[in-house]
Image (cartoon, rainbow, N blue to C red):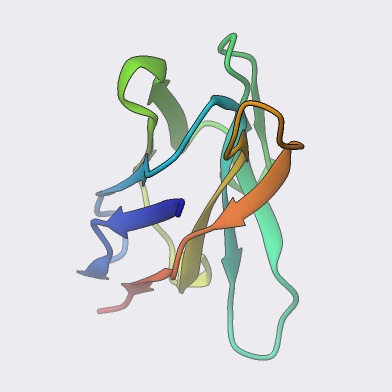
Length: 121
């Protein structure tokens, strides 16, 4: 059974920083792209940042220059460093990973349970 466990959300003042973590555990036979999405109330879920196993990154225009995604392939963990946070960054942040759960299995996307980030004074 594969699990993605997120941590690091919370309440922060505008201009502040938070660091989200997501660790994939369980029966894992390969991990490709890992990333973060977010969903604010009344809005669609959107990609925030993604990183391939080779370290190639992709960011939403709204977070470029403020957020940084990184990962450690040895421990199947991805981080999202969020700086200069704005109220519009408030959302539930979800971790995702494309991985294989068995040797003969197919690649599939797995999701974490989500962590709340609130940016408010």
